[in-house]
Image (tube, rainbow, N blue to C red; front, side):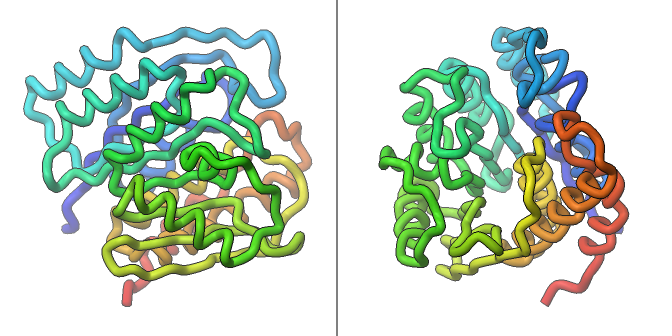
Length: 285
């Protein structure tokens, strides 16, 4: 039997809505991984489209959890970080990595901090530089286009993009994270949307595009990153994992659109989990 991988997922958790831990836990678990978590905050709902939500900051609990795990000598095959609520938390997560990782632990950072050309309003102007330091500790990073420009300290450029611009961003990001990069939100026209990958181990670059589905669907970034990681942990190459994640995310978006529910509730990723599992069973060249 294949050895089960153990993942430490460090994200916030929304009690209602589909994002962060409420996506990472089921997706990675369904793929056969043991998933442990360190919640960075607890919210009554996610923040997309809702007002009046509650927010409980858990900054003071993060290191004690990691220290306890360290005292128990728990081994983690992967640490996966997502939304972090403050500059302070990014520094704390760097300390967490010192405590619970070793030479064979895969570290994946989804540098959640902005979209549509803007830094999220909850963050200060100092947050991107703090996130850069965390990305330097990662083996895999998964920024969207906005986050890529923020990480590089460059003015945001609105797409459609040229291949030259995408390669410029990948080259810049590779100086932060020389491992593996998946840049999401890549598009060269208004019909197709996807990701660009750069595998620092092989130098291979790939563009993975799928037909764009109109509309705003909350949680798709977390669905993509979580399924990407699930595929990487199964041994798929970076480009293969990015393609699996793209296919699964598109399935979830189309299902959500067909159900015609309030889009604030989040993307319906649950319905297509069986399809993801089948994709993860495919032979790897």
